[in-house]
Length: 183
Image (cartoon, rainbow, N blue to C red; front, side, top):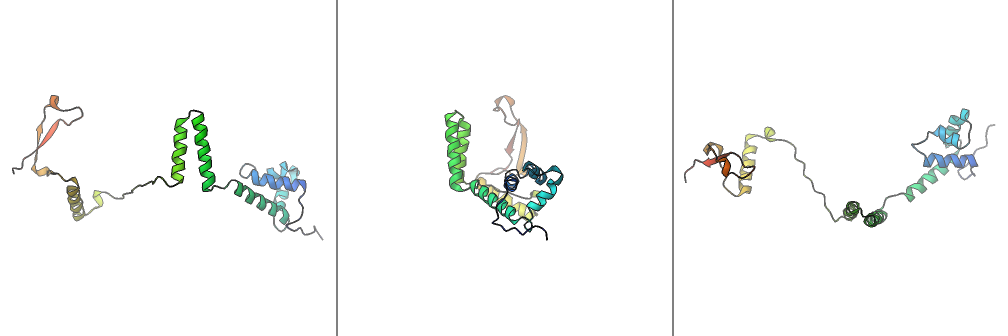
């Protein structure tokens, strides 16, 4: 005949309640066998008890309790905009009170970022001049010349001459380029 069928609304025993609580709160820290042992089940049968307790055909009431408890914790610790911004404000205020100005500034910056006050913009460029055709390189150079707005020297029309090292500002190159073109 076996055990009588349980339904989801059946009352849990103290061991079952403890097991369900441990499964939810110690997930990733304890194995299911360890949860069963800490709930009071014998070491020799803890593996079997853990399986039975989490099998919806055998113990639907325990499975329902685990599900209900997980949903409760998810709701309690869910991240939403209001909770997030309030937590950052609290961290900012505590940091200011403790003189941790860098942490306070960072918390305030994160609050602004959450509110959409800052826009993070990045540009990813893939490829190099080696992957460009001659026409693409010439087009890119023409665009650079237009953007520079000034005179761009052609390397073929330039002459390298020795510069006077003492007259150069610190960090300046020791050679100068003179334009050979005559206008």
